[in-house]
Amino acid sequence: MPVEVRLPTVLRPMAGGEAVLKADGTTLREVFDDLVRQYPGLSGSLLTPEGEMHRHLNVFLNDEDVRYLGRLDAKVGASDAVTLMPAVAGG
Amino acid sequence: MKVGTLNAQGRQSAGGVASRGPDAAVEVVRAFTGVGVAEVREVYPATNAARSARVYTVEPKDLLRSDREAERAGLSLIGVWHSHTHTPAYPSPTDIAQAPDPFWHYVLVSLSDTDPVLRSYRIVGGEVTEEQVLAVGM
Image (cartoon, rainbow over all chains, first blue to last red; front, side, top):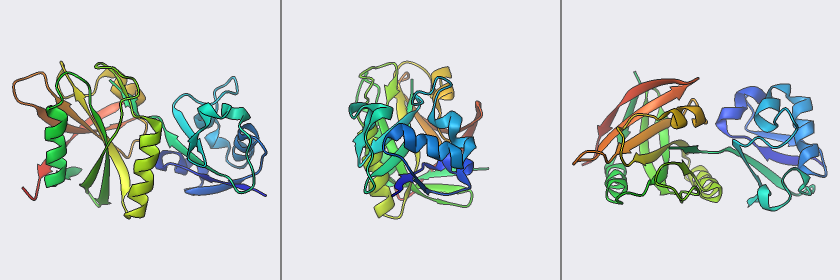
């Protein structure tokens, strides 16, 4: 069963304009890999060249920040929802 | 030209930002966006997760909560306020480098002079363009 992934406006142009995508995976890393397979343009916004989570991205799994759930190793189930949001920062 | 408008609540929020003294303040802006005009309907206070007077990071959970509330109200997040405590109301190199969304409005309140100064910008591909801010419903 695929999980639902909600995209912020800034990432939608890289995903055919879609706001909500479906992706397969049992971990967040697998979900991201499936998203990149479907929409290669998302790659640089989701992952670093080393394959880690992009630092300018906030990722929530059922409203919990995945930084506290194991980041890319967070377990994902069929009824889960992933929400991506840009990190908002400055100074 | 893009025109941003602030209603009474937006102005009140700007005053709130200006009255907080030396700590950097940040709020997420929710709005209805029309053609050429972004009308600020609500603002949502956010914790500065950086705990700094020099830099800010919107607390991720505040950002998520604001996004959910905006969606329920039929609005969208369209920008962020923050204060510059000792520098002009112009995006810093950090602001420009970390501007996440070319569709957002970046509102700055400078506290470096006697009276606070509020200005708004678009930041697209590192290029900064100021936009007009109108106060309505005062």
